[in-house]
Amino acid sequence: MIEGWKAFTVENARLTSAIKRVYEAGVIYEEGKITVPKTACGPLLVFTSYEAARYFSDDIGNFLIKKVLYEPSNEVCVWDAWVSGVFCPEHANRVLLSKLYEDNPNSLIPGTIALASAVFVPKEESND
Image 1 (spheres, one colour):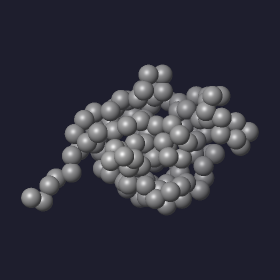
Image 2: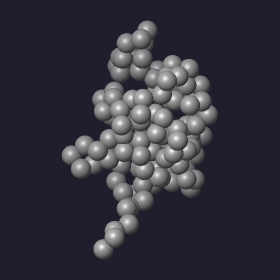
Image 3: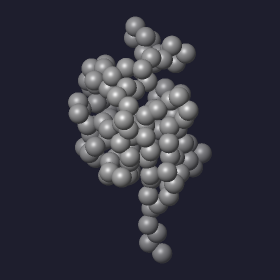
C-alpha cells in the first residue's frame, strides 16, 4: 500500500468521506480497517500530499486530514454529479479525473489525487 492523505468529516463519532458533508454522498471509514468503495461507486479519492488535502479542506470546509495507506485503483474515472452547474446525484456520470480538476480549480491542485481501490486508516496511537 502507498501513503496518502484523506479529508474526512466526523459525523456521529464516525469518519466519513469529506464529500459526504458537501454532496450528501460518501463512504464510512473505520480506523484500523480497510475500506473499499460501495458497489458500483468506486474508486475512492486520496490526496498524494498533506498540502493538497489542506488546500482542498481550506477551500471547501475545514475537514479532518489524516494520513492513510491506499491501494491504487486500475480505474481512470470518478463519479461527477454536476450537470450544467447544478448538483444532480441521480444523473451522476463517470468522468476522467482531469475533468474533476478542471471543474474545481479553486479546491483541487492538478495531479494531487490518487484513485484507490482500498484505503486503510491507521489507528491513532494512544499516549497512555
